[in-house]
Image (cartoon, rainbow, N blue to C red; front, side):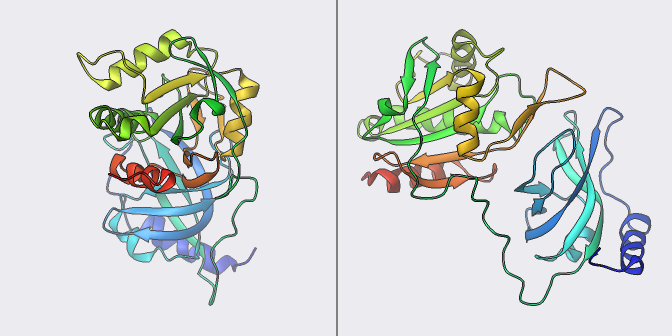
Length: 298
């Protein structure tokens, strides 16, 4: 260990015993131990970005933002410090996941640099490997079909219950698709693609119904800008692994898939220009990146 027993128990006592959390989880909430290094803290948004280890039975190691409901904890979190805590996943809560019972087990080191980039993930400037999928209309598509256009890819599954995960990704994509459909210039230069990592359930027909639900009541069945697609498990995992997306069926509930988030922007030449690793982006920010990727003029 890189800290003394005294530091560990002192930190645990101060954080867990003397300071109560501000929100109580429901009896059905699931809890997972989280260990990692604090990358950054956003006190205004009450969130901390953490480079965390694998959470057994839930999520692989990655870097992402987590809500922190306890104000006192935000005051003590410092980039570079190591922490232990609990990730609470509660689909019935207003905010469906957050971390609590935080203990700082090692302070930030003087002169510490940012965590290294995981070279297994796609990097800016890399060529995206081709893929073979079937879209919502039952048509076979590949990366070549998007050549010459700025493309954004995200990953979802239709049964996802978490508002901050697939639901937000699909809301952002459908909102942007509706916006672009009304723009005679941009609608021919930008494309959006949601790839399902649940091929066992997300048939093209289901994805079409899912997409229409997000496009809005009375929306035309027009998937020219935004498409949804699914492929074989091997094909989906190939492209998901390239972008650093991790997903696996929940060991205790086979209807749920535990997963991370990845949204990538790809230029007309098929190279990666931007990767959003979490959910902290808006349709406007995505459009800005797509315009830059395709050198699209407003």
